[in-house]
Length: 136
Image 1 (cartoon, rainbow, N blue to C red):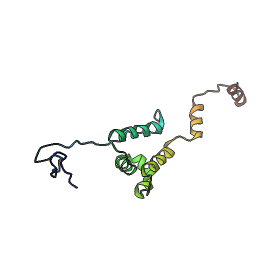
Image 2: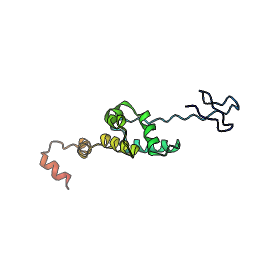
Image 3: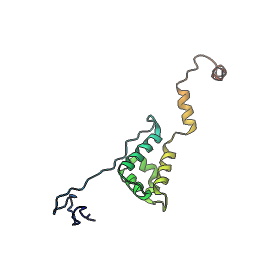
Image 4: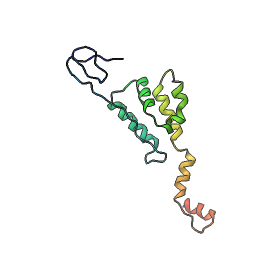
């Protein structure tokens, strides 16, 4: 659909400029920040970055935020959210999609414990010694 020029009201060409008064339309390309599993700050940092970018782009409605996000999602995220992309929720589209992304990519409690314990060495001691030293 062709947009009208904000200055003269005539229709603009395919490049987004008015042939009558030559007022170019500002172009904005919403891009989702890259996310890799295990990155510092996790999925919550990624979600915050997405929300800031949407706000800076003046994208405010649930439907518009959902559409901008879906259009820019990486394959690793669409793989885990394809059902919400194919069957768009009737309401709260963006919030529903963000909650799904968070639940799919946020490490589980057991994953967090494993990561914490991975850096701890028990040395040559028995597991019971390790347990008691950890609780001291």
